[in-house]
Figure 1: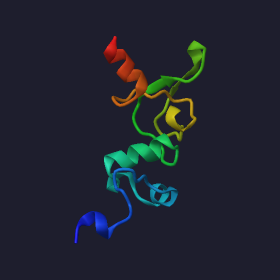
Figure 2: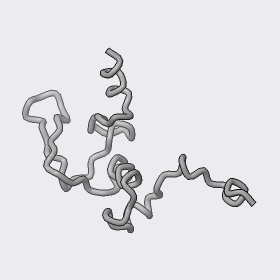
Figure 3: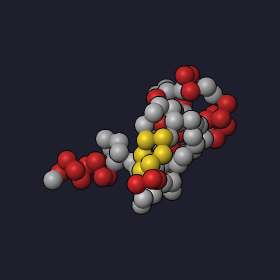
Figure 4: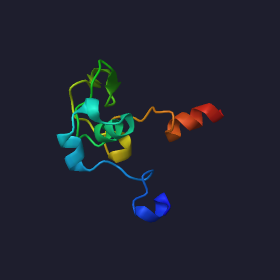
Length: 93
């Protein structure tokens, strides 16, 4: 029996559930699922990185310890990842 016959879930398209994000410690999550939980604002972000979340210079916010949604999920935090559309546009120019 082949693996694709055993399971109906496509693991590449699977994303973590809300309960998984809220109950599993960040150090036990895979990197991909931890990033997904952070982008959906289900887990606090870490680090000292700051982002400009508004039009004024005073709108720069350090995101560490906060639950802020990423742009892909309707939040104000810009998406600077290597797979983002804005990053791929910069490479093509």
